[in-house]
Image (cartoon, rainbow, N blue to C red):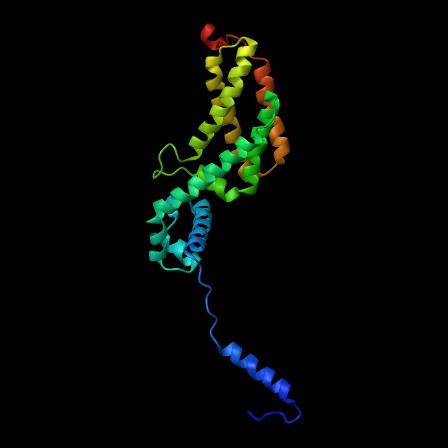
Length: 229
């Protein structure tokens, strides 16, 4: 192709340099081992949230990360290892969020803070919450959503135990009530995950309404009407 005689030398040099640069293959930026591990955890978290454990494959994780399957096996040993890391991170994240939120002195405020912390996690870390609520046979009872809620219930139990003692109720029943309250919030949270309305503050207010007003009108020795007949 003949040079344009009207084109100055600078323009020709820039055009030649651009053509030469475009002809060079783009090199892929190599990740460090730590960066690659974080990438695989992030991708695994998303796929586990979308499909659940059973329907997730190492092939898909590797494909999305644009690496070979042996790279995934090298970091985690297999799908179970990757899943365990993802779940462990989510468990710690949720527990830290709830524990940090419990700063109030009044029991009702503590209930509000716990409910808002859980709903906030669902809202902001939706994929992580979906991973936690999808039960998997590869994990023991210490590594799933139920175990997280049990840990939260133990914290609530201490709060209720002190409150029960001050009101003349049997503090041994605090564990039962804590499980009931946390279970109510957790199940409501799973429902809210899909509907996303009303807004989380309204949901939290209604959860606290039913739980606090119920607790404030407890009978010392409740009985069943049907059994008494």
